[in-house]
Picture 1 (cartoon, helix red, strand yellow):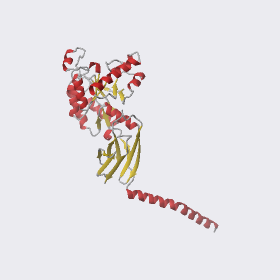
Picture 2 (tube, one colour):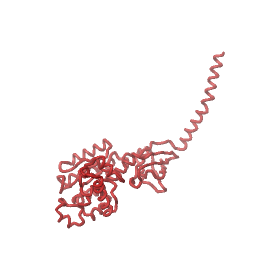
Picture 3 (cartoon, rainbow, N blue to C red):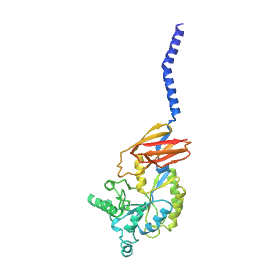
Length: 343
């Protein structure tokens, strides 16, 4: 009898203690289901548009046929490139290109560089006179090579460079520290392309980026006339056509655009609050918003969505719907992103 009463007591005790929690849990779950606020997975894409990889086509020294051939080639496929200028060597007029023997393969005039910039290409800093910065004796000399170039590009193009390309790809800790002041990034790695490069090799290289999820940065000089030129313009053109055929997986952007995106995505904190048929997403970013101005892609992993509306500061944001996700471009570290969808 004592054992029976003790067992009954234990049963009643656990029933009394556990029942409220069980009922509350069911009530909460029912409320979540009724309001449709089950939390989908939300993340910041590694690359814009949630592409698998990225490519920045960069062109050193602002050689003449980069303007004549490379820029139009990029534009034909909807791409934009980065052209590293040496301001002390940029000609003022077309006549100067033909008469100045120091400009061996010709250059691009400031007028044409401005036109390229206005068309979406990045015109940036390759040093005032292309000196090897590592060999300079003083910090003052290093700063002069970088800052003089910044100033003239700002004057002529209307945009102060936010990136830098080391002449001869040469840098050390001191040069890197100076070049990175008030800058998004500098080119510290690249893949050299030129007369030995084939279309098939470049295409295989692009496929490797897709598999590895990486950002590739070609270093290109001349196209057909000048230092390390390709055997023909078709070598590069055919490669770009191949990349265009894979644009659902490859993001082609300027060095500034992709460098900004990568650093922002690595330095942003995301918090998500669910609401009925939607989310409110807030981000915090410690980077300088005057330097880092690239929008990021928010990815919501969800199926069955037929329409979506996303706003930030009351303005509608670009949004795309795929079978298994929603992608929304937004500015990080700004006001909350408010999202609603329909199924």
